[in-house]
Image 1 (tube, helix red, strand yellow):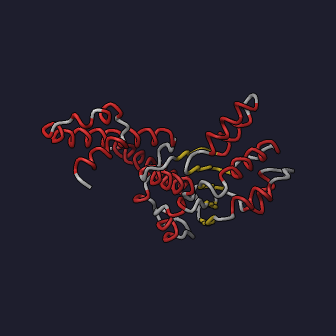
Image 2 (cartoon, one colour):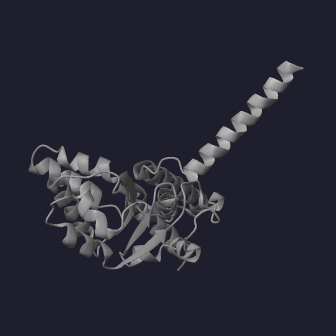
Image 3 (cartoon, helix red, strand yellow):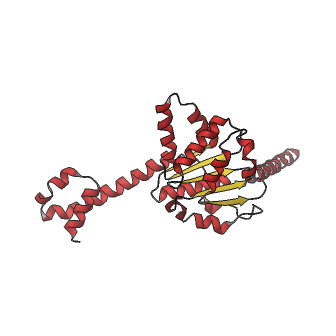
Length: 256
């Protein structure tokens, strides 16, 4: 591929229609500057695209994987997590289910996977189960609901956090099934939950679709169980101990 052909291909990919229409009018001197202009345009668009995807992902604040305390959980498959960070599951449209009690790092791991996916050029959406299901249930009319279902179905990766922390109606269960079913074998979904699947009937009591929901979710999925005490409780206790230490030092200073 010649330099001119390469530059024209870049212009086509950038959809610079005016430039393409006058391509044969470009002089050799202009072509020299054109290389830099197209590079600037491509770099700027890539940066804006990344910023837009990060905003739309709604990942929030989270601790990066480099700062994750792998020694705190009593049970966690560190190698499996690092393997998932290669994002091969996205190309296979498979799912990830992170199961564990409160505070063991499920959300943090899910956010890191979401962030890596965004940085690799994918569309991502992070949401709690409560926010998503309440949003869908609140839609007034079929058209509005259809648009919101598309909103949650379209991203390459959907992260549904905190399934199991609240119980939901049959309507909510049906909506979750609809999302999982629409994404099935098309796009990947990460779910974090504090309950094993055998207890999901407590999350969706009396819902007829629970078995089908779990079946769709776990097919083509990797289930990772994390066991341990709450890391948030550990940090809170450390902060409390630190404050007590500071107060003791102040008290000693006053006594002197």
